[in-house]
Amino acid sequence: MLIKILGSAAGGGFPQWNCNCRNCAAVRSGAPGFRARTQSSLAVSRDGVNWALLNASPDLRQQINATPQLHADAKVGLRHSPIMAAVLTNGDVDHIIGLINLREAQPFTIYATNRVLDVIRTNSVFQVLAEPLVPRVEMALGKPFDLQGAGVDLGLTIEAFAVPGKVALYLEDTSSGDFGTQEGDTIGLKITDPAEKKSFFYIPGCAAIDETLAARLQGASIVFFDGTLFTDDEMIEQGLLNKTGARMGHISMSGASGSIAAFSKLGVGRLIYVHINNSNPALDENSPARKAIDGAGWEVGYDGMEVRL
Ligand code: MLT
Ligand code: MN
Ligand code: ZN
Image (cartoon, rainbow, N blue to C red; front, side, top):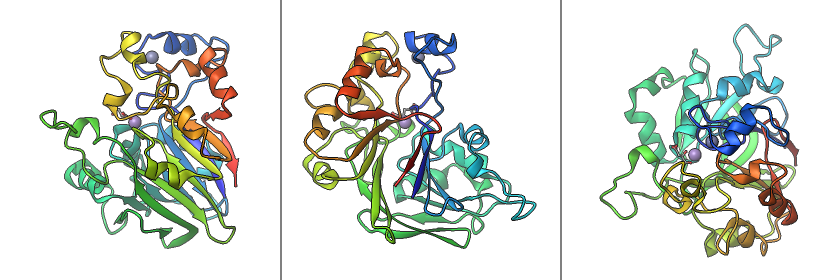
């Protein structure tokens, strides 16, 4: 299996268009130790020929251009794409808007939970991806399925499972304590190559690591995980936004209930942060935060990072 990080940043990317925080200013000025990042997406393939996107970010066009494996292959035809499917983990802007880039009468399959498919069904702009050319397949939680698209079996199975999280920002019901969050709003994915008996997990948004999730991830080979914030109040602290990570549905890296602590007991082979927010001090390769992450055995994902499994 071949996994590519197309985009390693959270919503807004890095730098974010309207932001002059320390990190955004530094990366914009080309300061050493900072690397620009596009928004949150991975691509996966068993054979290196046929690919599935795991989330479709607003930067998808740029990401495809930067990734030769995702280019239209002239040997196949005048119109072609190696992208056979797009699998969505929530309805966040940074995870679904890239679908719009995939219009042009090209067949592929969209996989999502019913909750996320509802977003696509009720926003008419997504009709540019009309069925039956672009079928929308509901993923039931806890039921692995064969990944297919455009008449191709990708040779991978996917299991979607619920993780603690929150409904997408633009759907929040602020009169309700949990903002109207329902099952299927935020999921993780287990992607398996049954022939090679190899799997990895992709969980770009997660509010907490509860017992169920910890048990599921115990002993995993590779986990790509929510690296939005280093500390829960860093956006407030930096004067960027009056919201904690918890309020946004994101666990932090540091702290007693953070991801570094939670994973320290789980015996995972390789831990890679993705969906990293521009406020996160670990984006500075020379920061104490980055050293803490390195010391705990985590990697910080970057655009173009390739992982073979
Ligand atoms: C998130 O990950 O919390 C969202 O992408 C935030 C947003 O929609 O801006
Ligand atoms: Mn996001
Ligand atoms: Zn910023």
